[in-house]
Amino acid sequence: MPAMTSSPSPRTSVRPEAQLRSSYRVFLPITTRWSDNDVYGHVNNVIYYSWFDTAVNAHLIAQGVLDFQGGDTIGLVVETQCNYFASLAYPQKVEAGIRVARLGGSSVRYEVGIFAEGSDSTAAAGHFVHVYVDAATRRPKPLPEALRAVLEALAVS
Image (cartoon, rainbow, N blue to C red; front, side):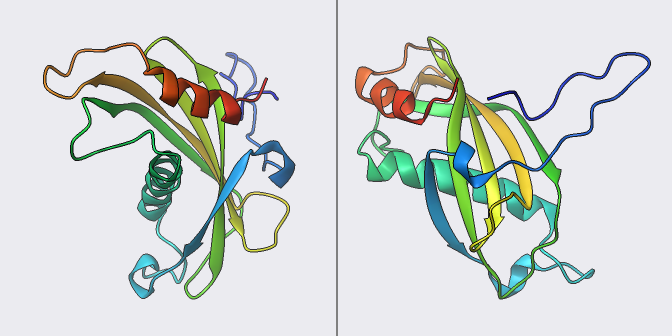
């Protein structure tokens, strides 16, 4: 699966394209809230970043590999980005698709697609990179084996 965006050359730029549902590994339903809409009548851009966090962390918690209150390993976001393709608005139901595009020794690049319920292409698609660190020292540490196994199941090539 190619990356969602490419670095533009000095003479051309590559326009990001919507992603297909089939390119994501797991999905989480998300219910929009009244407060998600902005004055323009659609979901505000910052809400999408919240949905990215919610989808990934909910999956990791459900898989038993994230204990954000008592665990000794936490993920810190070091990079994030999003492209928008179609508007969403309250009271619409949406689904977040998750995949892992890159898995390192202590880091992971999650890619998240936001879909209108039942749609086959993303309304928005983006990524964020977590560096996993020791909760006390905030220094990078190797991904725990259980976490790595869950992330490998989400990996795309």
